[in-house]
Image (tube, rainbow over all chains, first blue to last red; front, side, top):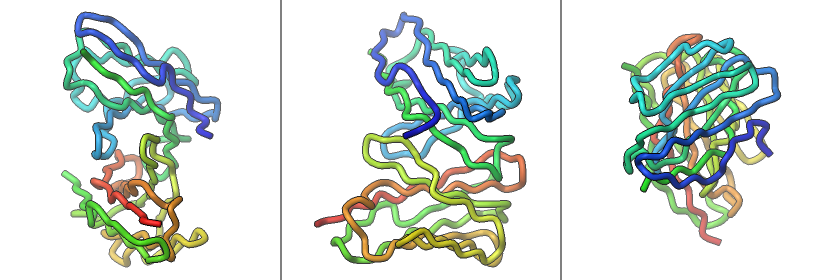
Length: 114
Length: 111
């Protein structure tokens, strides 16, 4: 069982909708991540938060808006998405920093944009 | 930028056969991590290698990190149907840098 919890597990949204993906971890990790994964491809890094501050934005379109309310929570706000944004969105956390530490992935949120 | 190549892309084996996937980086790595993703699942951490020439074993899985810290391999002895999934390597160029994932090797095991 993963210790990174993501909700919802499945989401279908229209291109004009606004929705949010939520992530929670209780491992005391200070780095949290959003990844996007398309079928048969590796996870692609989107955002990294370190100590609740956005440290990396991998040139992600502004229709994706991350938020880190506290050290345990991470949200991804979605607005005006395109069908090509349909993918598995993975939240992850690690103890500190980006490398040299195990990244723990959540089970993901399967997003379909119609 | 850093590139991590992983081969093969697909591997089909009969149960009981061995399996190996290889990872090669264009630059020297600080460390390399391996993940397994079952069909319909999420990536699960398997192991991290840090030292040049390091070899680690987990039951039937053997992980190696090259002497130059630019390549790595995962070898599974006597595959089982539970080994089915996609195996990803992920390398970091320097301490604190982002992880770069390989494209993954999708393993199918025929019973």
